[in-house]
Length: 67
Image (cartoon, rainbow, N blue to C red; front, side, top):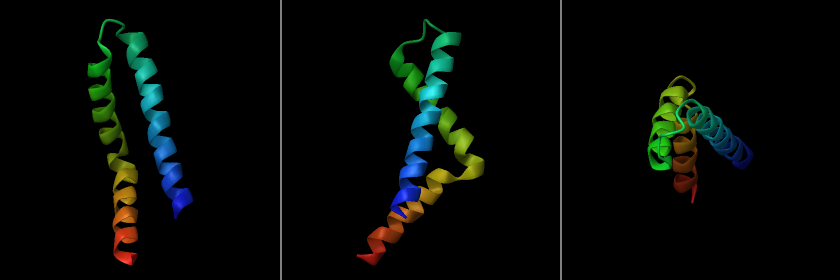
């Protein structure tokens, strides 16, 4: 279960890194804090189908219930 959680976190990090590079290349004048907001919105929209963020939340809830 921990390996799956780490895999989800790694995928989210890689997506945000790639989105950040693409946005910085396409729009070099946008400040970094606005790029962070854009990346967050893009990740939520991108993960909506795969629902990996929802899976991560369910795993956290499962861990809390088991203790």
